[in-house]
Each structure stands twice: as structure tokens, then as C-alpha cells.
Image 1 (cartoon, rainbow, N blue to C red):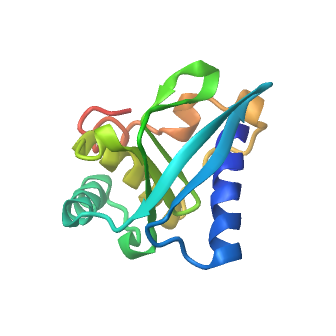
Image 2: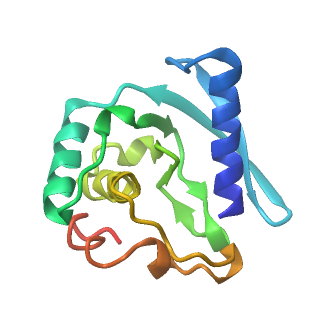
Length: 152
């Protein structure tokens, strides 16, 4: 969790220091423990298909979000996540980061969009320390799995 928060904090600092990121390549550090990685990201305008998938995830979950408020970023390579697991997408604070090779994966995109929909509709994970947070705490099923084409 901490490594992702660092990534998002750096993206937010980049955006606030220079105004909105349009299409210029930027980079951020992410890391877990003593290991730090550089992730290159580019802000994109989401394809129209992403809004359709957002609407499908809203309908499936019975909740509503705000697609227009999401900032989208792509990175050219998968990146290491918690426990060294390869990560293809992340959501935090209205920002979604997707690996470019997975940019047309309905399941992955809906998965990250569902995080946004849940957050915007008032859902919050349990209040406990990051070290005790589980995958299930952050991915209630349903709607994850059911509304994300199998991605959980």
C-alpha cells in the first residue's frame, strides 16, 4: 500500500506543480521496503470504450461514480506490486494507472474503475493498519469478480 501511495503522491505533486499533465511523459518512484523502482507514466485521454465499461460496472454493482473525474495514466511495462507480484493496474484517489499492454482488457479496466465507483459512492475499506489489510478488504466480492469479467 505504501509504495502505491508514494506513486500517487508523486503524480499529484507533478500535476499540482506544473498544472495538469496533458501528454508529456513523466516518471515516478514506487517501492516496497528497501526496493525502489522507477515507473514511467503518461497521462492519457481515455478511449470511449472506458466510459462504456465504467457504465457497465456501475450497472452491475448498483452504485454510481463520476467517470469524468478520473485521471488516466499508462505505463509501458508491468510493475512490481505488493510482495513482488506483477501488477498491471492501480487505482488511487481518482487516478488509474494501466500497463499499456493491458489497455484493452475489459476485466482489468473495469476492476480499476470499480475501485473508483465504490469510492465515489461512499464505500470504504475497513479501518485498520496497512500491515493488516488483506486483498479481500480492498476487493469486496461481489462486486469484484462478478462485475469485472473475472478480475478480482
